[in-house]
Amino acid sequence: MQPDYLCVFSGNHIDFLNVIDSLGKININPIIKNESESARLAGFGVISDKKTIYVHRDEYVKAEVLIKTILQ
Image (cartoon, rainbow, N blue to C red):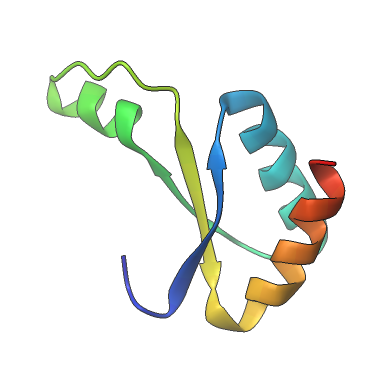
């Protein structure tokens, strides 16, 4: 991952969808890393439902506050 992007969330699919939707509402366009989907597309199998969301360094604080509010 590029050094200008920071991880703001890593977790299950349900929380992941909620976070993505909420970030979109405040005009933050995250980068999504889904290892199981990448492995599936490459023809490998991964037993993991973990998804990771990255945002640009300039939007990190705003995203972090939002995510803490959502997941409480």
